[in-house]
Length: 329
Image 1 (cartoon, rainbow, N blue to C red):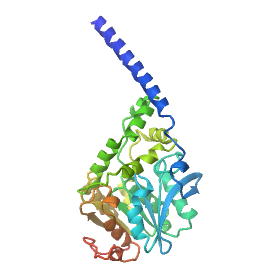
Image 2: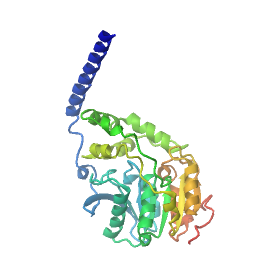
Image 3: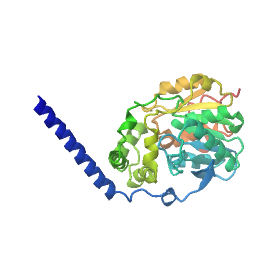
Image 4: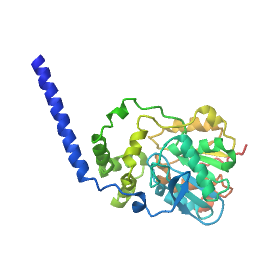
């Protein structure tokens, strides 16, 4: 038994050494992959609370709308929704760090994201925009509204219940041992197959446009310098959010919109949050978690119900399943 245990221990040591050497070689071979954000995205950028925030903009007139993405979502995912809303509004979509092309500058917390969104509004001279938060971004727009009710004309929670998802196992961060973590990060974030599978599961009943350009647009932000270490600092902390008591404190116009085929965040979670907010709940037929991509027209029409503009004008069609305007309280 002792002989076999010694052999097993020796085999484990040899495997660890082999993987470490292989990882070091792989990391050296791919060392030039990461680049400054400015080389991957030309801008625009704005400085907020000492952090360079990347954003996109549609429209030049009308009341403002701010679109806040979720976990690992770059602001380009709002392009179709933004262009529709931009016909009558000034629409902005920002990258929450460390996602998209914003500067990788900690802390990556709900409190700091709230500060950044408030500062983003001020830096671009917006007065009480409608705030739209997707997935993780839902908690951010709720937090902004509660922190300063005057900062938003209304909020839309899109495929996000704004509640925390708990913490990961405490030992998880102990496994992030260089150089293994760096190798794993680069392998996963550079895999077309991984992205295609993830997008397929989050899309709904439709088919994502799996062109090389589409997949590369998702992968590109993962090549921004400092992203791997930023993600490592977030692991094990779970998805931040607010509690039900905080949701019940929201008094401004609010709306919850959900992909009817969302298998990432259940539709029942959306209905629960809508009940806590005391607001209307709308399901987008055929859309999954990425409803702004799978059903941009329907999403834009619902957002427009909080802006005082007719949603039907965005597409020339009468909105379906809208259930009327959100009652102001």
